[in-house]
Length: 496
Image 1 (cartoon, rainbow, N blue to C red):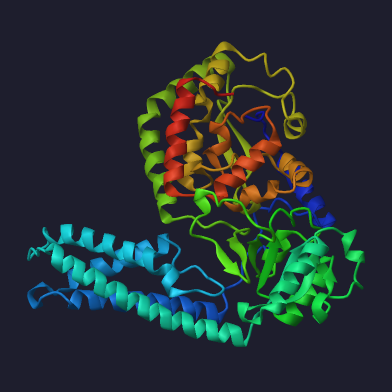
Image 2: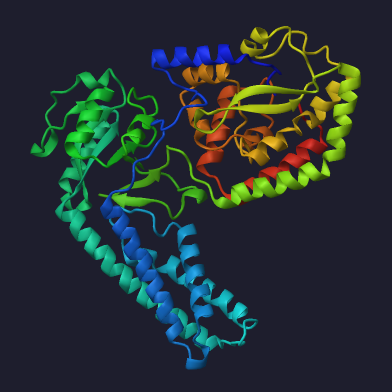
């Protein structure tokens, strides 16, 4: 863990003002509202209507499936449960995720599986609902087949209408990557006007490559402009009403026009494999699409959404742990008061989700020489001269217990990237390109980096990579797994 400190509010505010004046805004002040960085604009009306149409089709097919049952077995409870189950499974399976050229036959296996699972669960629940309903295997097979056919046919009509509109009016896109490969991808898309995308420019992944602007386009295709600055990008997005940006796989991270800037303009980001891709890792299966023969998948750069279950888990676990650990908290506080004197709890300013500042609570195990030292030094001088009890608290991570109150108040989560001090957040954000992306989700007491031993004086680059990997692959089960693995780390006394 980083060193303990008590930061004066005036010095922190002064650093924030200096960052704002220099144009490098990393940490949001407490009063900041409506900050644009990382914000996403609303989906286009066409996309919202397409999603609503798919939900309507799935709901209508589910309600029609109930009508295939015998008259005594038709009641609102069955219809409501089936509808809720099907829509929940389809959302979890990303069956409402935007696709360039969707096809109902590609979705048929996933739809059939989720419909069958919903009916199997419904058959079990129906036996305990008054009046009890028993569904035979033959009845289940009939209603599952009927609902699947209706759902696939309805989705086929929606997709046909969408593809017809996209092919008549291809969506303007930008291609980001090295100038040569990016132009090749743009040319391939222009040769296939039915793919639904029309490149209108190339965003150079290197400022040195942007100077090559006069190279003729292959096959007599129109010459696309090469954009290398954020001003050029902003004008191109507004003038052409660009909604999507294709980022060549393995490129674009070092671009002077960053992914966050594209995301702030309201553009959907897609990672595209310009060459033959290797085997798709298991977590990515089912999420890839194909455009003109290129495999692509959507990228999430802005604030990552989480389910309500994460906050529910935080409240439930923190409440229970605070009640159970109350004697331990009181005992630690009394011992610290006797051996270390007044001030057993210290407060330090940390950076949370979206760069917002909050006050982190912790047991005081060391006293820095002065606030300036604590604010700007990674490890406080003479930190090793802690007393035996303070060292025990650090090694067992008991000094972190007061942070359960931060979890209950919503400042942090149980699982997430560890929050850091504003001074180091500003420093690391300039040194490591993806460090600021750690703040897309709430920070936490423990995280993927911590259970892999990245605590204390360990690589910041490695921590950043693990934290972003956690955010990109977040799931409720992953949070539970990290909490269980954290218990193992506590038993081995790997705290710092």
